[in-house]
Length: 348
Image (cartoon, rainbow, N blue to C red; front, side, top):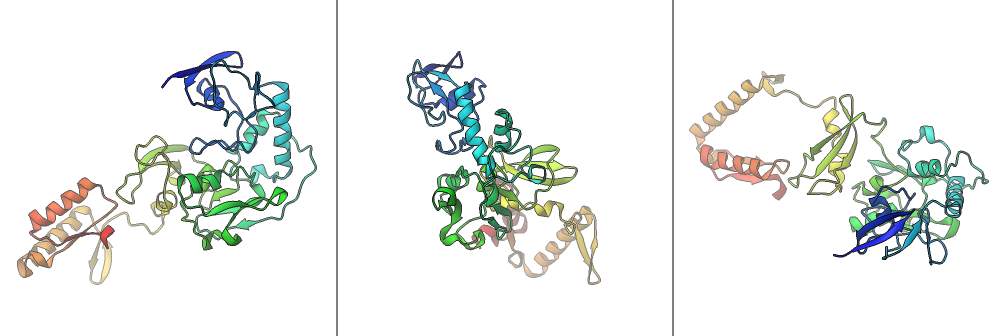
């Protein structure tokens, strides 16, 4: 693939043919504000925040949808460009709640970041009021349309990445909003609760119910559910998981997660989670050491095999294990116990 050279803010930039102006700018660390652009989605150009000046071009094209061409001269930070950006941003803010300190996306809000970049410190336009729509029917996240900026990233990821199409932009003009078929609550739609819309929302319109405090450190790990082995990034605070996101660098999932991986790890910090083996003595479960528990298993399996034969024993493997662990387990059942009574929970 051949390369293309262009000039951005006086710097010569070389990128692969087919790259957009936005990608070219980012490749050399030049910041262009965006709200609807997303690396996982096709260029959209709806928010108009990434407008730039291009010599010889009419108007102010969007950097995310404009393909870089040889010899192109681009200016990203001119008075005209920033004046239009500020107007766009101020119109968004005029219809946006001002409770940043109490918003779960505070310090992680892309609208907040863009407003700071453009030097917007107060509301200048008269506030526009929309009818509040709060949908907390989903068990894992809340949808607050009063904070929605109609960037359509949630809609696009539901269509382009997940292929579900549970939501769409409905209405026109000032009455436009993100809704489900028949304007039903999310819990009554075809939504699979994967949370991809939450992960791609640039503001606080979609927020997980379990997140209350920001994490102090990130821990990369592997999802404990199925055998796919998706990569997770756990936001940890103290000894609690307070945030879960997909690992974009992981070869299996590239950042995407299903409902179990994104919202199903609350058992880790559950108060009634078992942390030690239990052995029933005189009708009651009592804590025991691993040595005691394993000795009991060996003894009972030996007694059953001696009394009723190996086919009186069966083994059920787990999809949470790796292929190698499942292989070892079936080998144990066939070679050590002597039975072919082995099955897997994913087949039931």
